[in-house]
Length: 406
Image (cartoon, rainbow, N blue to C red; front, side):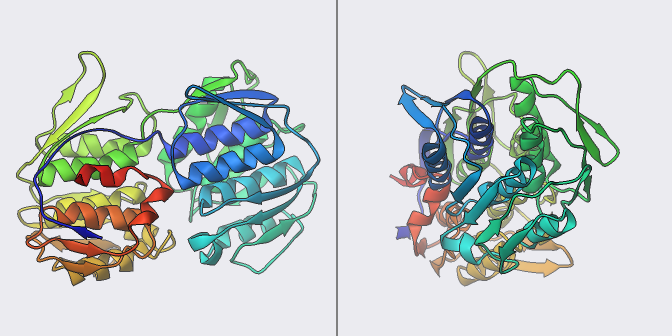
């Protein structure tokens, strides 16, 4: 696919949040009856829906998914597609609920290393069979002990799964978690649980349920995806104008910080709050910047685009969080952007990026949706455009992404 230099002028509604939807699906799987409002159109969302269909009755009406009559056979096969969140959270759920469960994957997730899953199982004496650190994995019913121990230095997804499952288990556990990262995503999980009546207390490195916790509502409304919106904002800020709707200003999604960042740096990004909330991003002079993305790894690709278009040298810290995503995103960003003329170096745990207009050329998405979107957005302000392979990989999170180039 060739993405040519253009001046964008688009009005776009972002997709509904994949992060919120997957958490809502896990809550639905553990509840007797649950409604999810606003369903994303993505491959990860489809994988979650297929799991719900396998073990419950699912009814779609208008923008809602009704999940009821959960089948409790204690013997599950969860096919997680390419969603690492589903894989990790369902391992955690199966351990807490005492299920026999097979966890399988496809695509990039089938060869992605997930050592934290196996460390968690061994640490808590959960019986399993599998070829660590890769899926598939078969778990056997075990009596997990209190407290549950977890090292969350690689990902917070196991912790999110534990927090959700613990609320529905017959016996409630203390979750003792060390070194956890992506704290914003943990906050998102806790906020979604609080919306249905589940409240956690946190003391040092331990999470435990409040005695006030009780399911009070059977409905979760999914809001717009701030991670997807970051790419659209970068497109407007570097080449034209993009009006973005379908976003919640009160969202707990951590990548909402991207809006705060660009406003703080004086970029042209007014926010309309008259009727419906709308973010408008227009081409701006981008100053060099420093951003610590340790807790926001999904923002690094759009930040790279901003840094390439900045007037000077920018630093993006925390790139170690990119090493084990759908691709090794650190090397993918470094190597693929170098092919089209970017001046990017790595120093310790940071990208050092010299702002300059990209020449253009051919590059690979590495079968990674966020690499594809970042290269595409960068192409629109390049000299000759970018020829990109496998554009369909954006279907994992944002199938309508290519509409902005039409």
